[in-house]
Image: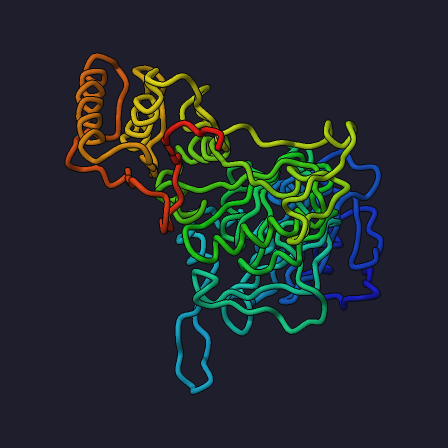
Length: 450
């Protein structure tokens, strides 16, 4: 029998070690030759969990089922006798049903064998123990005990000393091979994405971005941050964006929002067969997260110098990852300030009002340019109400005919009596408009020298 200098042996562990070759002690457990492949140098890590279960990890990538089968054992041989039970006594002497591995597997619609492979097992005091691992595959000092199907309804950390680490550090090698990583909240979404072949890392809470270290993203070019549709999701993204800005991370970051589902596991349960294609589409449609990349690398922006010009060299300029230009009207009206100038009576005001109506309605602008619907603020500083009304009615009539004669699909047909997306004013003074707008048009008379 080989004993560890850190952990005591157990009958379960002794039985496992007796079926392995080349067993030797390591810093936090044991190493041996993996029986599932032709292993000359010990690549199988063996450890002992908090509840006496034997933990196996082959660094060559062998599945735990193959390892156990090659040893002539079963998965149940990795667990101590009597470690699992469905009912436990509570403090007042009554009995209650506790969360079991099968309960969790059924709720998440994942195979229980897969959860066992991740080291999840029932805790003697009730609930399920979810082990966390370090990048080298050794158990982290802090693990989580879940007492309810969702972590928010019941979970706690063990009482060991040590810092909390992200969930899934031992799988970072897969992320670096793929060149991308999906950051999510909690363990359940990690299980779902791992099971479907997506590299993922979990943070045990929306406000725990501080536990993410810069070294984690080494070798990763694309980072996808999954934002859940609640205040916690906003916090999750904003805190991670600050961390990326502090590091001046050189990769590309994106924000992923799921349509019709709170998180990956909920999306998976809606359509298990189509999940992979649907989630891949969500990654492709993710929005770029703008952090420090738009600033010169040698300049730290401050509130007192935001409007001051900065100096940078060509090497810095070529290293920036600048976001693509966003268009209100494709290839015609970009974000930022655009001046439409020309001689009087050329139709500048007509063109501005036409684009404003098209953006507010959504569909096509100028007869053929596709546009997304959005709020518009139109400041008609040279128009009276009568002429503005007449022009709007004439343009709406032509837009309706154009929509009928083309194959473009609009969100709704333009109607003169229902325009919640378009706000008009004939004065720029004392205007308060709290909602963000996709476009703002300002028409006024020519500026003349005094």
